[in-house]
Image (cartoon, rainbow, N blue to C red; front, side):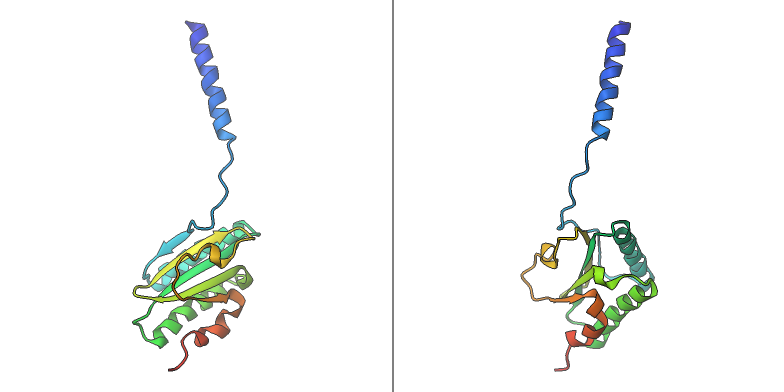
Length: 151
């Protein structure tokens, strides 16, 4: 009986050790790091901070941000929302070259954040066939007003 119990314990110990050595699967670009709808300003900042930390934890990773802005809001409101993100990037002194934005105009505001491998592109996370504009992080401030030209 002692030999059977000892054998079972050994088998369980080796099973746990083998399970612990399995590698985590590769990151898939289509899996969001975080996503959310309309938020208060400080909640948005907290989400962005978590995103920045995830990018800092992997110096080779890229960040992609899908910003779906409400097409029914006025131009000034959309620009204000984008400026809030820009101000937070500046306040945190985050390297803007590591982030690319895809900006949509849709029925409801929604944001999705992605941490992706270095070889990924924005097309790996944007699946919609809708029109969107791509802006590199380092060009963000200059391009904000170009997004919503006067009609």
